[in-house]
Amino acid sequence: MPEQSPLAVRLRAPEVAEPPAAHLGLRWRALTPADAPAVLELEARCAAVDHPVTQLNPAKVSAVLRPGAALVTDSLGGFSSAGTLEAVAVVYLPPGDTEVLRAFLVATIAPEWRGRGIGRALLDWQDARARQLLAADGRDLPARLAAYVDEHLVDRRRLYVAAGFSPKRAFQEMRRPVDAPLPAAPPPPGVQVVDWSPDLDEQVRRVHNEAFADHWGSEPLTGDTWRLVRGDLEPRWSKVAVLLDAPADRRVAGYALTSRHEHAWAALGFSEGYTELLGVRRDHRGQGIARALLVAVVAALAADGIDSAGLDVDTVNPSGAHGFYERLGYERVGARILYTVEI
Image (cartoon, rainbow, N blue to C red; front, side, top):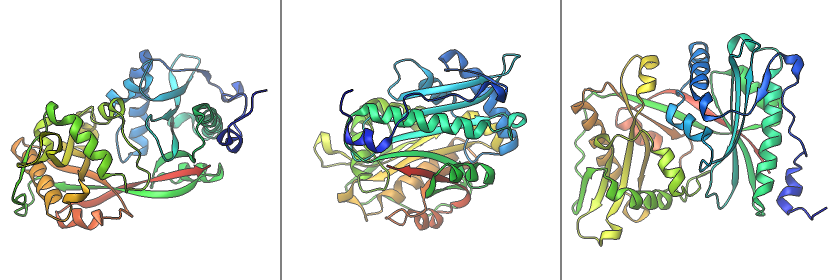
């Protein structure tokens, strides 16, 4: 038997990850890109009951299920005797992790199939597959199993705690009406706020990795993962702060990338631009660049007749971002809690 890496020893990955047993009433198989519509239909049925803080993104569902995706993934779909998808579980490992190897767990079960033990059985399978996939990496680094749970889904939170997960971080969803008054926020001298464009994209990615290097849980985004994260980006609503007198490869000082998640608007009851990523290079912080970027985003949303501006924030962000957003009129509307097992 080949010698195991130190991480593999710590992970104690089982040889086989067992799917939920047949007596639970569903047939299980790996999901494929052809299952994406069924996954979204199941998500819609669940959302009508769960009222999730965020809606599942169709583009990201397709990307995760696509063969050869940038993410290392595995999945299980549970089908009824009528062939209807009733439960889904996914494990994915983002590429590019350098400090902590992470495996994210996502699952959902149709409301009428809950309370039968399927949730715990799926979580056991995800735990086993996550450990197997992390062990295959081979590097001796800390590892993390992680899952986001909406704070109001108390039964789901209890499920993770019972399985040995602990609440690690809370991320607040915040929102402001676009038509509320905006403060004046001109960029500092020598800085211009422009719309995102493809020629700036790679530099924005590098600046993002630099800006978030001091944030808990952040790992560098590779080119493939970056394209997935910004998949619904709306260029007119996404702003970049450029330095007018800097070399071409150091022009970007900050960015606010905002998405058009039209798939979520019907459930929300209004249109919204969602700022996925906001950051400023560390050597340009404290100059009002982030404020100028976000005010420019809201102004762009107003010009397009959008109702709301949304974003999320780590409640223990070291830069005090929560108060910054409140001063710009954003209010808390919910939260997701990150549950983890640290290995």
